[in-house]
Image 1: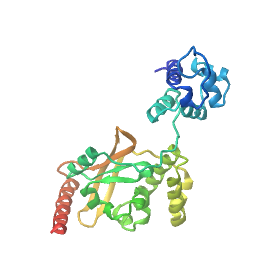
Image 2: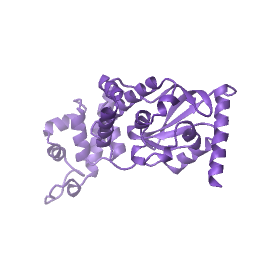
Image 3: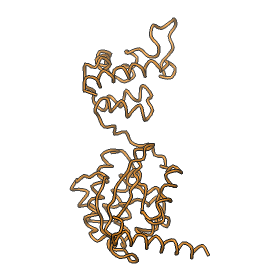
Length: 286
């Protein structure tokens, strides 16, 4: 959409949403007599949002660009759900910085099945704050046994800085760690009021001088794609391409997969590691 089309659509969208909201739902007293419009009037929305009626009217008419704080207030007043809020901010060309609800993220069963079916491909699912939400057995064999990490500490950046084995597992640990800090900085920009993320940053800043230094540098990076070299104690050197795929039902979940070109030494090493891991698990089950 062009900017003008988006502004017009934003006004139509707001009008449709206020038409669905009753006085009782909005917390307003119900007056006597019939009303000429369905739902809330413009002046009622404006009063609830603490803005002038003229200002709100210009928003609906597409005659003014709206700031993110005003959009957030209107979304609250109109009781928009998460999808509607994202759509509203998208129409206005603004990033939604609403803090995530502090509920535990869960991986869909079908996504866990996909992880488990990737027998020769290490894969994990990362959520908000780069928390590790799920993994397959090969990822556990290649990186660390995530199941042995307490759930509250199962965070990729935290593991990188607090598990001493990570500094020898990654051939260029410093580069990997710097990039992870930059990715975490992007998470902080998305959710600046997330108390768990703030706690994680504070903890790592106190425990690790390098983390504190790199965090203060304010470099940023997105989870996307790249190459990492691991020196695995069992499988040897692994040169892996990694990619991230968004989970359609939850924008805060990313599937991260590590792959290698077929027929190469890393591909064969992964096959060996998968067989070794399966054998180790079979031995434990006996």
